[in-house]
Each structure stands twice: as structure tokens, then as C-alpha cells.
Amino acid sequence: MLKNIMVDLICFPHYTCGGLLCDILNQTFSSVAPNGGINSFQHSLGKIGDSDTVFDNYDTDEFLKDIQALEDMNAGWVGTHCWPGLLPLDKIGKIIVVTTASYQSKLFRWDRAYRHFYTKQADWQGLEEMELLDKARETAKNYLVPFRPVFHKKVTNIEFADIVWQTQEFRQIVQGLETKKHTARWQDINSFLYREDILNSYTAQRLYEADVETQLKRSYIYY
Image 1 (tube, rainbow, N blue to C red):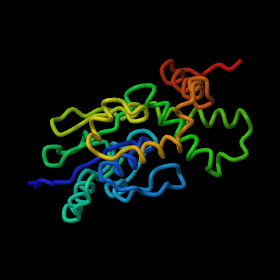
Image 2 (cartoon, rainbow, N blue to C red):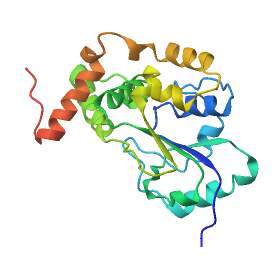
Image 3 (cartoon, rainbow, N blue to C red):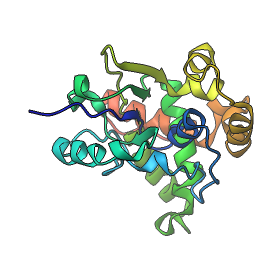
């Protein structure tokens, strides 16, 4: 029988503020990583894999064994890419799930991943205009898959866009903690998310085309 594992988790798909939340909730201030994220030690402790879509095909026994080993470390809030809907939630500590149910959250996540990661990859360099467009549109399809909320008494769900906009839902989660230096730096690193024309941006257009192809089951027609 599985014993209780009193480790608190932040479950998030990549590029959705996992490092930022770990820094705020643990009251640390980590360096900025080359990939545009926050290089928090805690936000990597629960990672056993990743996915461009949703990481929900992992080995739950492996994950539980890994976080059980963290109990004696007093690690604080621990990050993971594992979607927690597969886990025995009654046996784990508190859980925050960063969801991407809304189109805005999907766009913000895709925009961050495109700018901070994909454009820096060797196989994206030197592509001609239509080659790059096709690669971006196909990759964007992965970011349309939502990281869904999990409804349980121990779980707090927060939409990624609420973190970006620092809404009341975000402020409630971080209530009583120092946040200003964390959020100011994060907004500076990701200032492109706050531009007024984001819906007319290159990344937004590719996501829209990906959505059309996914929903209508046909190729997008370019004129």
C-alpha cells in the first residue's frame, strides 16, 4: 500500500511559468536560463520527462518513487511536467496545476516556446519562407493540446494566462509572498507577450492555421 508522500507539486507544461512559481512559492531568486526560463532548482526536481503537448504517458510508479525520495530534503514546492490526473492525489501533498484550457494560454505558451526555443534550434535555421511557415504551423499543433484542470480537494488549478496577466487568481495563490522582483523580471524577459498586436503576430497566425487544420481536418489554403 502506498504511503503518504508529503511533497507539494507544481504541475505544468513547459513554457508556462513553472520556474517562476517555484521561485515565488519557495522564496528563492534563481538565475535566468538560456532557454528564457527561470533556472529554479526546485522546478526540475520532479521532472521525469516532457512533451510538446501534454506529458500524460509517464510511468507513475517511477514518478512516485522519485518524489518520495524528496521527502527528507524539505525541498518546498517541486516542479514537474507530469499531468497529475494519473496520480493518487490523496497520497500527495498540495498540488498546483498550471492549465492551458483557453486559447489565450495556448497562444502565450506557443509564443514563448517559439521565440525562446524553436528559433534557436539548428534544424530551424536557414529555412526558406514557406519551409519555416510549414514547420511552425505543424509544431504549433502540439500547443493546441490543453493541459487540463484536475478537480480534487488538494488541487488548485490556475490558467497560464492568469499568471501572465497577474490576475486575482494568481495573486490569491501567492498571497503574502514577495512577488514584485520576480514578476518584473519575468515580464521583461517575455515582453513580447504584452504587445497590443499579438493576435496579428507570426506565431498567432501559425497557431490559427494549425487550429483550422486540426478542427476542419483539411490543409490550410494560402493565397
